[in-house]
Length: 257
Image (cartoon, rainbow, N blue to C red; front, side, top):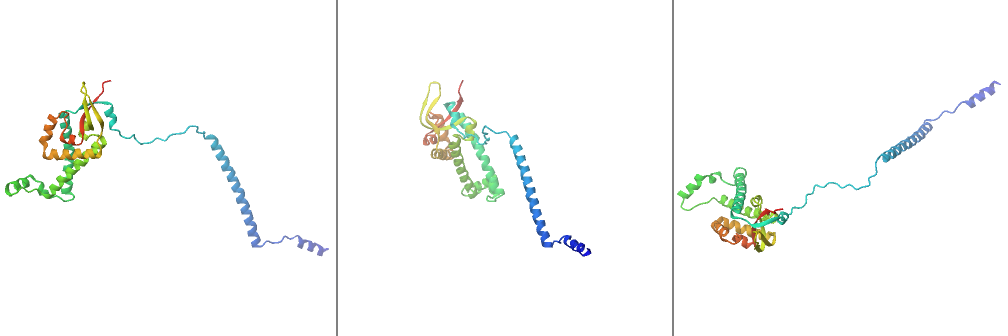
């Protein structure tokens, strides 16, 4: 009787698990827990997305993004909406004086930079005493080579500056300030009320602007009296450089409503 009880107790004793079996079982449990957790998170995210989608209104109209692009500049727009008259002598002279001041300020700054920062010009050659002594005590009038180069560069800059302004704005800064414009003119007719009709009345192209600027710079530098005579005696106040470029300088006046 005792032997039967001992045998049954031995059979009821559970079998001990090895380390490998325990590790395999733990891995299966971790995999099952990870799959369950992932499904729960996915379900929660889907529910959140659905709730947010229901709160966002559906846009039925297309929105246009604001653009910072400004409309292209049209210099002929104000010319079409204004009365044109042949520019007076005093307006043209005042406009040339303003351009002269602007360009000579740039020239002074250029000489200052070349002399003080780049050291390409000897400062002693810029003094009035040096120029007076060179005139009085030297047999021939000597002009510093570096200043001659600066003058030539200044003339080139004047021509390029005026050519650009005429092809872009139909006027230099002085002319724009006094409402003057330089237009292409193959035929000009003065009406009874003083207005002028110009054909074709367009902006000068690059070739015509370069011709006018070159002639103007040379004649203003070496033959300045001829410019004054042409302005005072010509029929439409066209100078030699205006005639060479087939151009005319007009004055803009506001139309009476």
